[in-house]
Amino acid sequence: MLEAEKFWNDRFDTSDFIFGTQPNKFLQQRSELYLTQPSHILCVADGEGRNSVWLAKQGHRVDAFDVSTVALTKAKKFALDAQVQVDFVHADCDSYFWSQNKYDAVAAIFIQFADPELRSRIFQNALISLKRGGLLIVQGYTPKQLSYKTGGPCELSYLYTEELMQDLLKEAHIIELESYEEELQEGKRHSGMSALLGLVARKK
Ligand SMILES: C[S@@+](CC[C@H](N)C(=O)[O-])C[C@H]1O[C@@H](n2cnc3c(N)ncnc32)[C@H](O)[C@@H]1O
Image (tube, rainbow, N blue to C red; front, top):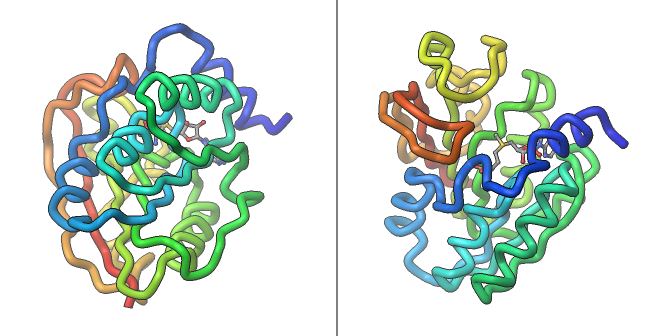
């Protein structure tokens, strides 16, 4: 078992949903705004499935993967209870099979387990897996989050800045890129005033 899998399995091994059951608000709002047709969406590292299940409920076709088997078991039950279908796959970001030109959208919500090298590979693969014109929707924490301590990683290099996103997504067309502060109530792990970054980019 991968070290990451064990770490996240331990964290998810509780009856409650540690990031809540509601979708991330940025993803919800931007998908409602931009994905006006039923779309094929990939949710990267979607944990207990709050984002993928909500997207499937909106009529989208959704694939999702995560390194944690414990989270995936919860996600599958969550989808079953919601009477929607999500194609959940157990994989880490490097072993996941990233199909080319497949998706209308890729959602990368709070995937800040990635060090700079892994992060570059994930964003590169996310772009590869999008169809031309497809959307990448990202939510993460900015360095200011280190003073809020209401969720997210403690390592500065794992956090997002607008400059970092512009650099990672040089080959895409950035539609929205903003840093802002907002109160999050996403389960016990994302709770309180938070320093956030939201991004929407289109594959050229
Ligand atoms: C902060 S949680 C966010 C979960 C979900 N995106 C959400 O917004 O609720 C990070 C997720 O990344 C997963 N993860 C950690 N390392 C991973 C890796 N190397 N590859 C794939 N998933 C990973 C964890 O199991 C966890 O579900």
